[in-house]
Image (cartoon, rainbow, N blue to C red; front, side):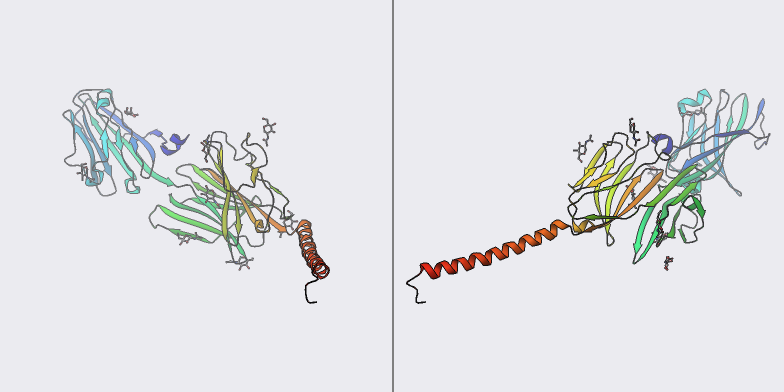
Length: 375
Ligand SMILES: *[C@@H]1O[C@H](CO)[C@@H](O)[C@H](O)[C@H]1NC(C)=O
Ligand SMILES: *[C@@H]1O[C@H](CO)[C@@H](O)[C@H](O)[C@H]1NC(C)=O
Ligand SMILES: *[C@@H]1O[C@H](CO)[C@@H](O)[C@H](O)[C@H]1NC(C)=O
Ligand SMILES: *[C@@H]1O[C@H](CO)[C@@H](O)[C@H](O)[C@H]1NC(C)=O
Ligand SMILES: *[C@@H]1O[C@H](CO)[C@@H](O)[C@H](O)[C@H]1NC(C)=O
Ligand SMILES: *[C@@H]1O[C@H](CO)[C@@H](O)[C@H](O)[C@H]1NC(C)=O
Ligand SMILES: *[C@@H]1O[C@H](CO)[C@@H](O)[C@H](O)[C@H]1NC(C)=O
Ligand SMILES: *[C@@H]1O[C@H](CO)[C@@H](O)[C@H](O)[C@H]1NC(C)=O
């Protein structure tokens, strides 16, 4: 799954008409074969090219823009020739030399950049035929986006952002499952890759919100979802149970995710515990924290917080995140002083009263038992 995503490659094969570029004296001319290859920024890719086996193999890989053609990699007389290679391809290309005899002229291309996008031609000549294969290379990037929930003064905002993306993605927002428009978007990186964030003002709303960011070239979509639960009032020393579930739409048994519970109080976020699905392991930062259920199904991440203190008041945030989504659930909890605290105070008064009584008693005893005193 991971490997599939990190080495994304789509082949769309089509036979286009006989567009002869290279006139040849060979016996056969083969129509140009065109493929679209999609690579990822900074990763490696294979540009495919095959031919019918033959002797005296000559291979010329070239990059073609509207004005020029640049030498990418050449092979003839049984070895690679890089004397005329354009500097931008230095140390980045190789052929599968052992495979050439089997009709494989594919080019291994390292560390793709966005400038590598374009048309590549692979001319292969042998004693019996000449062929030119054409490869259209497209390069994309999609760093996992993020959803942030921010409070500034009395206003609240949701921010969906992606640090590096190309080509420009499609960003949509939904409020309670209805599409809404958002026009507060910031973008940097004029030629790409782009860094984009989209901010929604959700002040005073308790609707559910969802934003999706889609890279149509890489066919990858990420979703951020935010849900506010009804506020809870609890007494000191009581316990509270807060729900958080991974809904079916997102649950995929073979995808790794992380669950984080944290408390937000006056802009400061403190983590209570987190769970990693890959190791099925929880790391606790708060001893009064426990899961509500055994985490067997890996879909219900509701938690309990025992022995509440006044300082536990605040917003609790459950964050379930994978490469494809971030699901945020917010609970507001108010803790109030309990009856027990009041009786504690009563106890203190009883203690003070007893102390006064004892002091008085000692004084009286002394009056009786201290005759030598000049009273
Ligand atoms: C050429 O060989 C390489 C390495 O074995 C392989 O990955 C690639 O798919 C081959 N390409 C073709 C077109 O056969
Ligand atoms: C290619 O690699 C050689 C040897 O590792 C190095 O000397 C040269 O500077 C590299 N060229 C580029 C353009 O990176
Ligand atoms: C949610 O968790 C993910 C992964 O740990 C993290 O990148 C992201 O910043 C978190 N979001 C919030 C709002 O805490
Ligand atoms: C949004 O993006 C812009 C430019 O990339 C950046 O300056 C700004 O700090 C970001 N805002 C937030 C709230 O992340
Ligand atoms: C956000 O919305 C609230 C309520 O609608 C409004 O009072 C506030 O000015 C808005 N803030 C921004 C930065 O747009
Ligand atoms: C929040 O949601 C509840 C029920 O879903 C609704 O009754 C209430 O009016 C909402 N409050 C606000 C401020 O929108
Ligand atoms: C779970 O995490 C603890 C420390 O946080 C570690 O000592 C333990 O080996 C981990 N267990 C598994 C099964 O990964
Ligand atoms: C957890 O698994 C049990 C048995 O497999 C099933 O009966 C139960 O409904 C599941 N609970 C959830 C929340 O999916």
